[in-house]
Amino acid sequence: MEHERIICVLEYLSRYSDENTYVSIKQIQDYVSRVGNLSMPAEVTIRRDIDRLTNMGNNIVKKNCDHNKAFYALIDKGFSFNEIRFIVDSISINKFLTSKQKRQLIKKFEGMCSDAEIRQLISRITLNEKCSPSLDLLNNLDLIHRLIAEKRKINFEYGKYDTDKKIKYYHKKRELIPVKVVFFNNRFYLKCYNEETKAWRTYRIDRMKNIESGEVSRCLLPKEEKCDGFVIDMFEPEYYENVTLRVKRVLLDDMMEHFGEYASVSRYSDDGNSVNISVRVGINQRFYLWVMKYGDGIELLSPPKVRSEFLAEVRKMLGAYPDFSFQE
Image 1 (cartoon, rainbow, N blue to C red):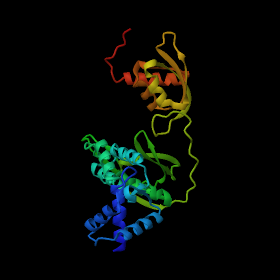
Image 2 (image 1 turned 120 degrees about the vertical axis):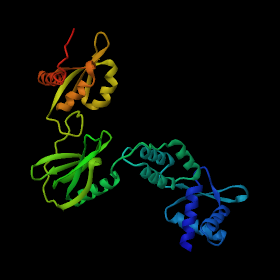
Image 3 (image 1 turned 90 degrees about the horizontal axis):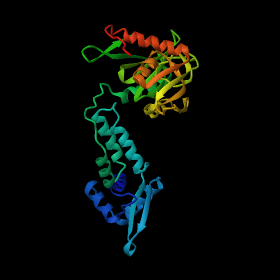
Image 4 (image 1 turned 60 degrees about the vertical axis):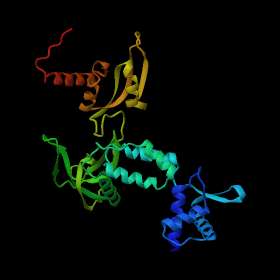
């Protein structure tokens, strides 16, 4: 009964008090007897419970008001309200969680807030009901992190979209060594090492299911190549090269957000409509396709080898349109 009462006291302080709202001993007494289905505790009992909760590390602040009447508030609940709001906002926009998972997670953080703070959370959050991930990403991540920690190999089914617009899963014996989870471009990836082929492989975690644990690996992993420039996606480029791009001024913001510290920018052209950007990038077909999507907004100037490879990709793309004819 004593433990139940103390839990009720902490629950009331957590829910109904904060740095702007203090509660009285009488309010706590009423809550304990009403919600906890316990007999009305004495004032001295509640004060003793508050002292015990404080000694346990809870930051319960006492404030004396009119007639020296004491009021109490639980101030530090592990997270500040702004931190909780940020976490809840992040949960609500996560496309990998189902609406049910979002509600369950948010409910747990609501337990750290007062009623007034909960109302602020609710007013700021809209759950995206159109989000319908096909797999339990949280469960996948939990299993993968466990296998990495235990140094065990991993097997799984991997899915790709079929013509019927559904993901079709393929199972085969992979026996890969899971090395690390990487979050890139709003997706979770698992980087693995194939001990047999000596090759690195990368998989989207939201496309994996029926993850199984394999034997413990004692393989000494080779040193990973560090990223030596801007890369389009999670997959290894064929090589890295310093390239120069002529970029229309309206795209400068977009380019700098992509290239970041890898880029240096020259002055604007005489007409003020374009700039030259020098940047070290990972070269592969995906890079060329990325440049193509900007149309005439980007011209790949140098080096000649990269420009030539890019033009070959452009000609290959135009080959899909035999009726195309270039006109000046």
